[in-house]
Amino acid sequence: MLGSRQEEHKIFDFRFDWTPDLDIRLGEIDNYHKKIFRVGRDVEQLLRIQCMGVEEKQLIDITCELKDTMSQSFCEEENYMWRYEYSKMTAHREAHYRYRQELDSIDLILLRENPNKEVQHIKDIITRWTLEHMLTADKNMADAIRGQIHG
Image 1 (tube, rainbow, N blue to C red):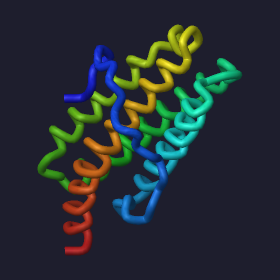
Image 2 (image 1 turned 60 degrees about the horizontal axis):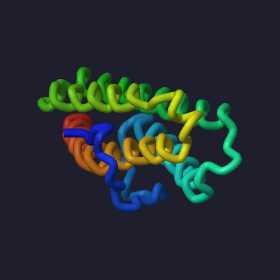
Image 3 (image 1 turned 135 degrees about the vertical axis):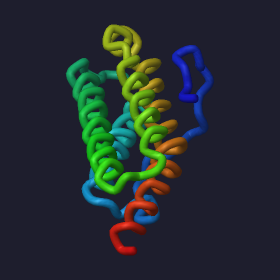
Image 4 (image 1 turned 180 degrees about the vertical axis):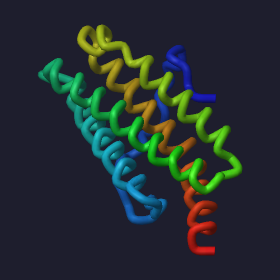
């Protein structure tokens, strides 16, 4: 299960440095994943300076880019899963739904009032998505679909 808003513990310090071994090599999905990592790096930078001097527009832009990019990634993945009748599509789509809920839990008022806390929450969302979904479910899905394409 995805982390809840009540979880105040900090997930270990994951670094958003893209390396070629993270590629799943399926359509545009890697490009979306790279964009999410860029947002993760932006978030890391904000946390390093404890959000000092950050403008509200920058926070909103980061939040919107993350939501848009994850949504595009999910749509691309779901199109592939549907087209190739991926056997674990239902569970994968349910995970996407839970991540969308997690993204919707970003509190824009708290983002303005206590940016450091909410930016940490955003980093935790991206970190959980990376560790629980991208590195496992997405790689497994891509391997299965590439096997059908090239098999």
